Image 1 (cartoon, helix red, strand yellow):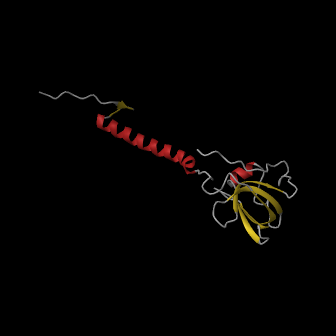
Image 2 (cartoon, helix red, strand yellow):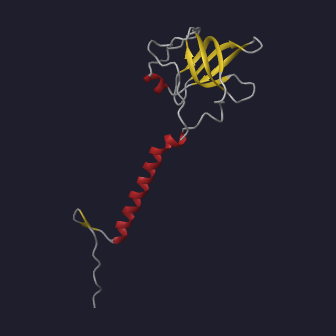
Image 3 (cartoon, helix red, strand yellow):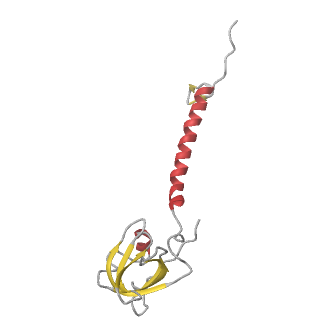
Length: 159
């Protein structure tokens, strides 16, 4: 007696066994999962500023820019200002990515060393540090740094 033939799916004129079909499905599933994780990585990687900065407080300082690092994933602005005791200290302001700043009219040349600015933002939680984020950055008179530009970096809600 001959054994009954098992029908196999036919793809583009090629006969495939059920095991081959399952193997192809497995590869498709793995590739799909990798793609899903790759697309979700930026959303997973984004973090809240709450552990690092105190949203219940505001700090204000004014002085000349010493350095402006225009980069992704975060830009940083450094400037000198007097602390509570009148001593000069260097402040660090954490900003959004260069890509976002560019969309609001900022460039690496927007804040050159020596430019006097006024900054109001959330202070760092690190004891003894002089850092802030989610800052409003203006000229000393309160006008925007760039003509028609946004003066406040808006904080995104945690996801």
